[in-house]
Image 1: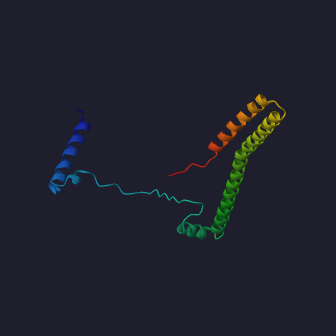
Image 2 (image 1 turned 180 degrees about the vertical axis):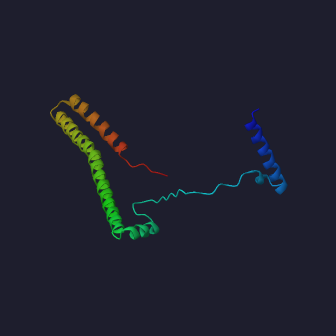
Image 3 (image 1 turned 90 degrees about the vertical axis):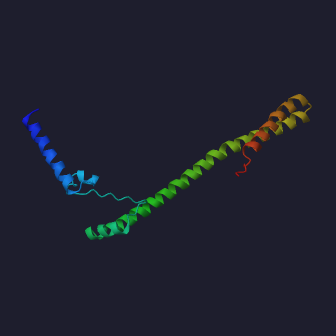
Length: 150
């Protein structure tokens, strides 16, 4: 072992002896005291576009127009979110309604064509058109009937 290594061991042994003398039953005494804090990191989280009142007061102390700008920005953001949700709801409603209208028109055409063929004396062809129409109607009724959520 080098001279430097022995010196470190001796220093550690002396330190441990001093700690044991001060309070041998205290296990926390064996640890070094915490170093002085040179700085601290502070993190603040808040939900929504408006910061808490204490932060708004700090912003006001920097520049008196900042809180008003933040409030204006929050109002504009909220308005944008509402407009976007309204647009999405309208688009989804149209996307759901379009195939339903198409299916309804097709169903009416099949039923009308089937009755017209039966009226013209072509019973087999008429019933061939009426059969799928009844199946489509049944599928639509079962598909779009609200289900009980218990």
